[in-house]
Image 1 (cartoon, rainbow, N blue to C red):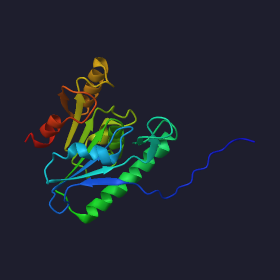
Image 2: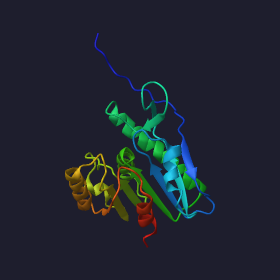
Image 3: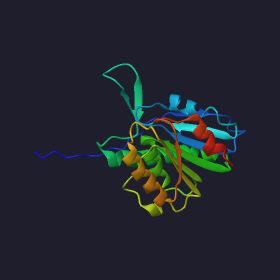
Image 4: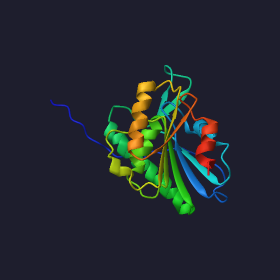
Length: 208
């Protein structure tokens, strides 16, 4: 008997971590964590931002033990298994997050930051929306399945990479920087590794 696959759509409850006072805020900043991270810890990297920002960290849909079958837990946005299904589920999940937030407040600006694996998810999701003002992809490979035209509607795109990033050697960094420059992204490099670096955050959010 031949094996077949059937798909079933079911409701799943997701966690989003928030930081700031939505009533006092002017700008919505959605941040997507990297592979193996959790929203509760990732959002802490943005504590230095002012009360102008309402920060929301949706958590990846898939949880797993980082080592073995117990101990610390991380989350992921997808793997190579059932990749296309996860991509579509992530888009629907993030659509629901943003629509819920917009129903509560009219923000002056909406920003989206994706770190590492979360950057690819941010890029794919934002490509289908026209209400995100600025996209920041931090230490993230640009998804090869997206066309350059997908980002023509952005007011501003920024790519951030640490010069000592342990996941990108010098040759890989040059390739990614070139790719993002061709897309019209501003490039920000800093002396650091694969992490959200505080001084660089300040440069991005307060350089004006």
